[in-house]
Image 1 (cartoon, rainbow, N blue to C red):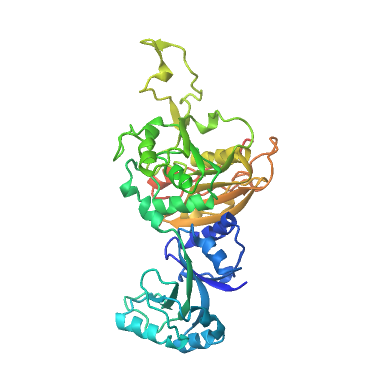
Image 2: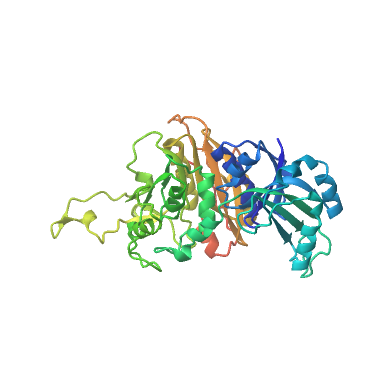
Length: 454
């Protein structure tokens, strides 16, 4: 398969390969690349794809991808680039009489206009005779001088690599602006930013005909992005005020429905409901193609579940107040208790093991104490395989975007393998009691591990 150059956005570096692999599955495009050649410090990765049309298809939904470029040559100097390009002169003939443009960029250093012009003129040996068009050109050629990123304010004088090729496709980074939370009619203090919300939709393989569920829907960010890509979506939350927009949020009083109207997605977001995921009304067995969620972990809003401090669970009362059942009153809030983070994650995985179809994906955020995180913190289950685990650091803590795929039907007698049940019985996950750890500035704690009851 011929080589192509993926030009990534230089942010969320730990997420870029995970999204690219998901795009490969989503679009049915086979790709090959050497993971060892990938670097956080570089926005470029050489991949092998069957054709230019397949390469364009691969990245058309990419959020962390700027362009994909048909690779023509690279080197530490322009002379090395020219030598490689000249090995296949027959490739130039196709574009000899077509309109064209050159895009010249510097990475790690800003190029002056005269440097860009000089770079373009150095490729005159290609012999293109077509018209130069800055808009609507039949072919766009890309030159990038990639400089090493230094720890000093000074830029490096010599590029570490010069890349050249023909642009064949681009990602969908314009969607970041379209779904910018600053432009939303309704948002809250836990609304997920547009870029990561769109990446999660790609990780979940959201597509036409798929059914996606968010069990901690909040203000509905994932409903918007997943449904934008054609999926049907549904959400629930224990706090109906977030859904309705009556909890004193910064903007909007019409709740999620206001955003659906803003983006014209009312026909794809099937509904939202209010209930505790631990006592949900869904039918038993597989139902959803993807579960995409950001569980509340207490930094801005704490997780809650139905219950009372005495350990009992509230039941529906038939007692009438002014002729209306208490639980049907518009201002009714059921009694809740704190929902410990490790319990949230374990319950979420058990729920997904039952409710996802085989091949379905669970995509969720996991907060952790950065210095204490261990891969075995993640609860596991025979019916799941780990697809990706990407970190977004925030100093003393980080959150990890975890993507899992259901690979086998569930046997209802199987038990979740939760963290803390290792043979030694002495491991506590770095997300346990996360809210308390966060507000104590991650001071070390002593705690005895608790066995997980299947």
